[in-house]
Amino acid sequence: MRLPRLLLALAVLPLVACDELTGITPSADAPANLAYQLVPSGDPTNPLGVLLSWDVPTSGRANSFNVYGRPTTGSSWQLRATTTSPTFHDAGVPELQYYVATRADNGDELAQSKVITIDLQGSRLPAPLGLSSISLNGAIQLAWRSNAVDASHGTFDYYRVYSTPYDGSRGVCTANWVVEGSTVSDAFYSGNLSNGVSRCYSVSAISRDGHESDWSESRLDTPRADARNAFVYATATRRDSSGFLFSDSVTKKLGVVSTSTRTDLDFTIERHQDGSLWFAPARAGVTMALYSTQPVSDLTSIDRAPSTGFGNVTIEAVPGFAYVFRVVRADGVHFAGIRVDFRTTDYVVFDWSYQTAPGNAELSRSPRAE
Image (tube, rainbow, N blue to C red; front, side):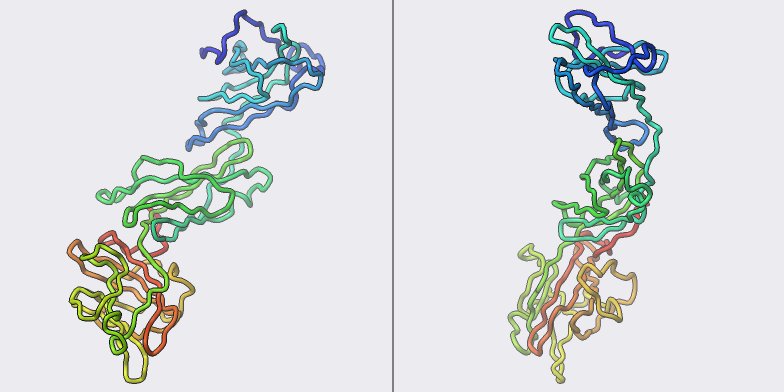
């Protein structure tokens, strides 16, 4: 049996609930509208606690409140706490039932609220469906369907977002789940992440009384470096600014524009006789492919690099179109993406992304984790 949170100098015999034994109508001294809200833990069947709240009596005679609880309907009531606040947080597994009694200045109990029953198995919202993700630079953008809200607009309160490290050696999400944050939107931005380090994500829906839904399916994603508006000249215009490296092993920087005479470049921009500009792999370890036969709306539209189709060929740089690169380095194969924003006969402006994790083809959206 658990001890009360605040022991009184004298034992106080609790009043029984008026609606159970006395049949007396609550007076102006009684707390009204006793309600509860569970504290989610990540386990829908085992909350971290319960938050009780009630209205202060209108008589003005209440000096403080005694909070009582019991684990079963047949158990004796036990004093859980005495408080001057119209709320009480009972940590741990909640009692089955609670009621609140008002205390006068001399410590006598004046009146009590109705009894409230905690329903741990109460109506839960459905687990969010369709969790998806977009790989960003040092961040992951998550999104999911609104099915939990649609199931009960009046019941839904917010979402909880969880994450855990991914064990690449075993190909599993670890059991070290933590709360990333909460949101009322069906999207969430997880920032301040390390590029090339994979994490798993999941989401639950919380009702207004604190009931937590089952979790969504897990999602695996890996942040990658990117940048907007890289500006690279054609070699025929300015050779000192016509080469590009997704990762410069010399300066340890990403997205470096350099001279076309370097032997470690990933690609250069070449101009054909008709004035068109073309991406040209600059060494044997770099191959590329057109991402799609249609323009894409943004760099983040480039999801995963394909497993085949790469070649050591030149491809014309056309505004709106996307390209993927397979880059062999000392630590393994890396993948990169490019979307062309603008082109003249002298230079190309493009957005780029680069996956620092060797062998990881994620450039934007990620598959579901196993």
